[in-house]
Length: 270
Image (tube, rainbow, N blue to C red; front, side, top):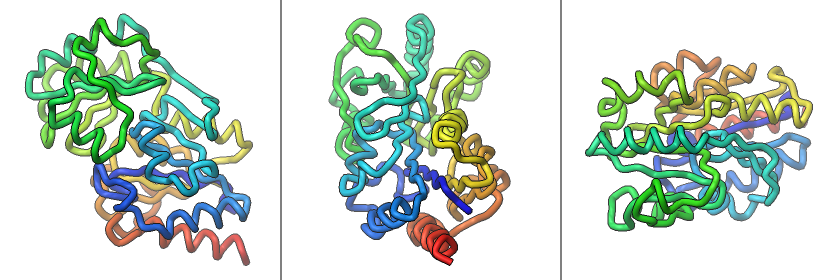
């Protein structure tokens, strides 16, 4: 019997950067039904809590939200789990990220997200499409007084290639690096990540991996798939994600996750 359903957002439920208008409203009813049947629903995403809440506004209080790549977990307004990057690590990552000139940088704190300038492609996309609470602060090294949970490098389609030669080899043993789509490389604390977040919730909620079902599409979803007996890659997922998953479902534009949620409910009601 499944007691915990975990789902990524971008590329799994909606296209990358999709707003609430892109989400099939049937998902709201399914969250209500799953919860009513004793199943915990977790949205685990690289998105900020504010962005996830906007996407799931009608049912946000029913969810557990694992935000910023699993660095923070919320139940309503209570933060029940957090992993913070050390200040010196943040300083060094930002310094190195600045050397990759085609990339922009977003710093994610417990309070807000931060960028250098509001006049950038990244800032506008994060603010207008993702719905982040983001502030333009100029110098990212001097003008942030917040606990930092994630630093993201952004390029509109080549972040994987731009960071492969020296940035990722330098940092892969010091922090957890997660590629999220073709635009984002997320740097989170070594102890953080989606898999660690789901392991925490399983212990917190007294749910086993055999009672857990997860859905994802990208490299950063593999760790949480390893925490679940029932793991689904959407058909549009990266090939390595499909290999890691136990099952495959239809792509996000065909509401593949929704179909599986309906099947889970039918099984619960038997």
